[in-house]
Image (cartoon, rainbow, N blue to C red; front, side, top):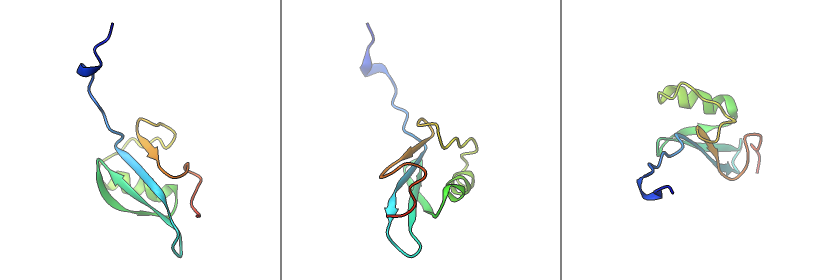
Length: 77
């Protein structure tokens, strides 16, 4: 029997929000709960994460990056 109340919650360090329909479209990126900038592609997500101190960025690992409003290949509305 496990005690769920004692398990620690570890939020995903990188959250990529849904596409903003602008010209060009972009997605806002949060690192550890704070908005750090806008990304126009996956390279921007990695760059923003590195600038915020997250050095091991596996875009396919849901414990590292959470994609909201579409997967990593969705960059247009």
